[in-house]
Image (cartoon, rainbow, N blue to C red; front, side, top):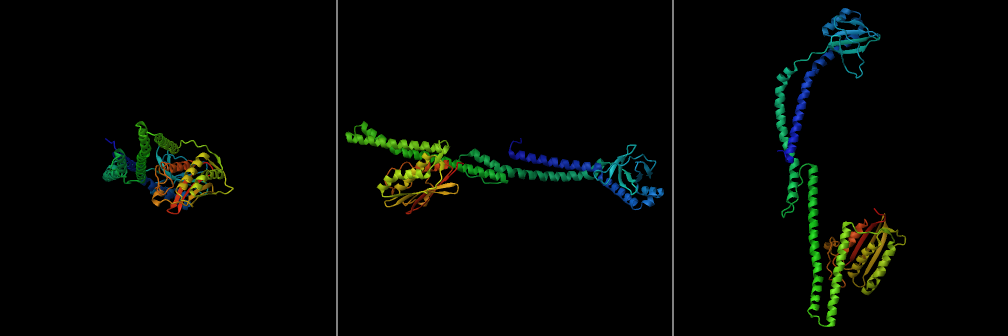
Length: 457
C-alpha cells in the first residue's frame, strides 16, 4: 500500500505525531501520579516551621509544649538529634522512630525517610549552633485517585486537543511529504522519459537538498545532450572528411581499371593522387587515435626535464626555410635563465609545430611570427604570436573543437588538414596540467598563450 515515497513520508510523519502525543499523555499521567503539587506544599510547610525554630530556638526547644503546639498546628513532626545521633527531642514520641537524617549530597530542599513501620516521610534538616541536628518531617502526601482525576478532568480535553492536533498534523505531514516527494517524482519521470523531443529541464522546487539534486540532474542532462551532439558532429565530420579522399581514390582507381588513364603520364598522375589521398586519410586516422588516447587519459607521456629554450630554438630552425620562402620574419624571445620544465618533450614539440605551422599559413608576406617564453610564479608562460589575418570573435570559442576550421580562403596554400591539430594541442597541454588560451583581432594577428606548471601535480 505505502509503496511511493510520498505515502511513506506521510506515514512516517503520522507515526511521529502519534508517538509524540502518546509521550505527552504518559508524562501527564506520571505527573499526576507523583502528585508534585501536594509535595511542594508540604516541603514549603516544613521549611516554614524550620525557619521559625531556627530564628527562635529558645522559645521552642526549651519549651516542649510550645514545640508540640507548633508541630500540631502545622501537621509536622519535629526531632532534635545530638552528635551521637540519639533523639533528644521528639514532638511525636508515640510515632514510629525515624532514622538519623542522611547527608544531603544533592542539595535538595527535602529528602525522604522511612520509619520503622514503613511509612514514608518528607523531611528537611539543619544543624543548630550547639552541633545538634534539627529535623522537621511530615508524612508524604498520599496518592490521590489519579485515574478518576485523569478521567474526569483531563481525558476529554486531551482527546479533543489530541484529535485536533492529530488531524492538523496529518494535513501538515501531507503538505510536507508533497513538498519533498513531488520534485523527486518529477526528476524520476524526466529520467524515465529521457530522451524525448519535448524534454525540458526540471524546475527546482522543494527543500534545498532536493533543489540541489534537481539542478545537478539538469546539469547532467545538458552534459549528456552536449556529449551526444558532439558525437553526432564527430561522425558527420569524419564522414565528410573521408568522403573527399575516398571519392578521389575511387575515381582515379576506376580510371586506371577502365584504361581511361591510357598514357604513362596519366597513370602516374592517378597513382600519385591515390597515394596522396590515402596518406591524408592515414594521417587523419593517426590524429583521431592520438586525440582519443589524450581525451581518455591513456596517452603515454614520457615526462622528463625539458629545456624549453632548446626546444623552441629547434622549432624555429625547423620552420626557418618555410618562413623565408613565405617572406615571414620568424623570431624567438627566450631568456637565458629559464628553468627546466617537467614535460614530454616530443609532445611539446608537437604543440609548437602545429601552432607555428598555422601561424605561418595565416601570416602574409612581410609579417612576423614570434615564439616567446617567460617564468610567471610557479609556471612557464609560452606564446606564439603572429601578425596575420586574425580570427573573428565568433570563431574564437570553437578554435579547439575537433574538425573546426576557420575560413582558409586567405591562408597560404591549400589542404590544411582535417581540423584536428588545435584539438590535439589543447589535449596535450591539459595532459601536462596546463592551460591554453587564444586572443585575436581581425587584421592584427593572433596570439596563443600556454601556461604550464614547472612541477608535476
